[in-house]
Length: 311
Image (tube, rainbow, N blue to C red; front, top):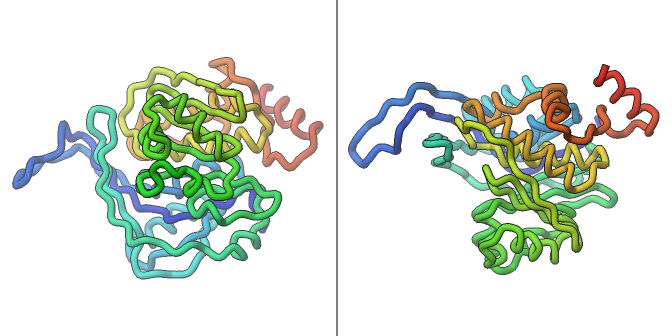
């Protein structure tokens, strides 16, 4: 079955422990008030895309352990098809939100890149995720920098960009890649090696650069409960808006809004709202209205979808 977007890269099983005032000191124990289980990593992007109405698949190695089986169950419940060869272990992250910031402990067994033929068989319009060299002619390619990759490629951002059309990095990753502390200037530097560069700034919003055009978008004021995965949902909404033909500034506005809405509850899975909810929130805030649907229909069909949604 043809998919709008194929996500590649290792998904994680996220275990989010809430209600801790701080991390415990060595030899001590603290009790939280809740334990939440969700799929994480690139699975967040896939779930966000699916809830935003895009047909989505995930191609990666599949752990046969408990964590892998639980990720598969969660993805199946969201309508995200997951394919790839089986391996022994899946990746797991324990997230502890403290004072609105994320603290993470991770087990990652590593991953081999999927075969390009596996991706091509799904005939995607876009590919999102790791392994930036895996590209297909005529298919849009989005890559997130990632902290470890950014640290390894310090001063050489082209290593992370690969053949991507769009690169996403947070402020720390952008600084590692460019050596520039200012997010906007770092974004400009990244745009020298990729068609579009986007730097996310948490509560400070986001910056995007394409050619000589630099766009800044502020984030709405929210009380953050759990920021784990907000960057993944930012990517999902950005891709959603891009596939609907919105200009850079509007892509950033929708992406910042989607990420901001997600942090009000524990886990990204709970915070990823549907397309209908996002559109209603965007309309209230004066955002430009994108076409609703898969984006494959012609202009007249797009207008009909939008009219029904506004009715």
